[in-house]
Image (cartoon, rainbow, N blue to C red; front, side):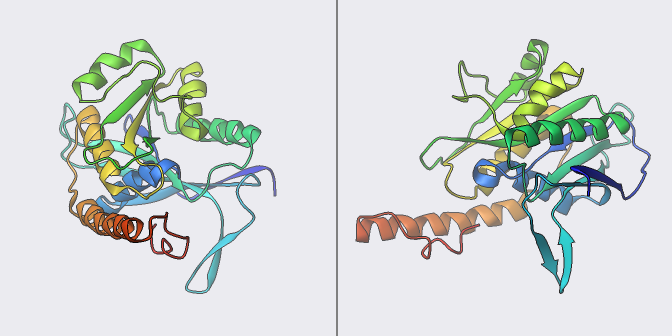
Length: 259
C-alpha cells in the first residue's frame, strides 16, 4: 500500500461543517470526548485513512480483522443554535492511533486537512488534555488558537488562555492542526482539559465538551460520561488506598483494568 491511502466510504451533503479532532493523547481526553459525540448523535463513516505510520496491527471484532486506520464521521446535531435552527454539521476525526514518527505526524495532518477541505470545512476544533501531574477535581479547559482574533469568543465560552501554557506547547495532530491548519487558512482552536496525565479522564473530557458546546452552540447529554467518571473515581480511591497501605505506586497488574 501507499504511505497514506484514503478510502471513500460515503459522500454526505454537509452545510458549513466544523471539523472536530479527537485522537489518543494525554488522559485520552480528546478521544473520549469525540467518542461521546458519536455515541449520542447519529453518525456515518465518510472517510477511512490508512497509513504505514500507524502501528503494524489489526483490530479483531467477531473474528474479523480491520487494519488500523483513522476515521472521519459525518454528524448532524439537530436543533442546535444555528441561525436557521437546522442544526450544526460536524466532521468528527478519531481513531486508535497517532503517527509513530515526527514526519508521519506532519504527513498525516496534511492528509486530514486535505479531507477537511474536501468537505468545505473552515473551522477546526482539536480536543485533548493538558497534564497537571496530579488529580484534578474540577478541571479547567485551556485554549490555544491559530490567530489572536479567536481568543475573545472562546474566553466568553469559559476557556482559559494562560501565558506560556501548556508548557512545551501542543504536540501531535492537535498541535499541527493549529500550526499547519492556520497556515492553510483554517480557523483552528485547541481545547485542552486539565488532567493528571496518568489515568483515562472522562471528567476532563466532559469539561472539554461543555466548552465545545458553548463555543459552537449545541446540547448533548453527559449521563454516560458522568457514569464513567464515577467509575474512575472509585478506581482512584482504590489506588490511593493501595498507596496508603503499601507506601508505593501500584503495579501494572494493579492498574490493568484502568482504560
